Image (cartoon, rainbow, N blue to C red):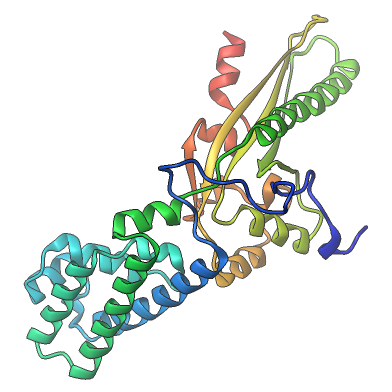
Length: 309
């Protein structure tokens, strides 16, 4: 088995002939570069830390959104967003999308000042908000545009669309072979078989071989849209004509912090799962963009019902 650092999943990541990513279409948000993401991570961690300190200084009855809004005389929506953001155990760039806007944060902090919060904590929070404001102006111009950039993924060029079609065909062929083997050993029974794989950036991901392999897969998926394909085969009893279809679901994974990655790998839940994760594990950092949830879990029930009908 090759060393983890040498293992590949399939075709190489998408680069042009000069080794650069293809240009983004005009008008579409461009994902943050590695340097921009690192800067956003730093700002998010600082803002998270100072706001967490402020929230923890409140009486217990004022640490929820409604109680905080009454205590500080600040609108509840602003308080709700802050409570949600600081509840995350560790901040990263994506946490910035949870915070209210700069003006809302400034009003919130003034509310803390109004109830006698330590001035050093207030000053630290205002400085963190100023840094956040500078980040917004440098990277996007507005908070909404920054959120768009945080959530943006690279466009899918023709070569990847071709590889995506190949991924679906791989799922179909693997599934047919498995179902044919079962059908050949079974008489008088209907065979239903399903197999799943994940495709991301033109790379086909099956089940990880070990924890290092799982880490590589999750690092590839982190912050990206990807697709889950399930090949579904229905082979009716006594028939020589199986029905084979492929279901596709598009998902988006948040940018994972090192802590999130380490904690998930430590659970062992990645074992035996295409792409090294299971949507059924109710992970807060995987979201369905389009398609069937049951397909991601491993058996596309909607497609099965259609094939049985």
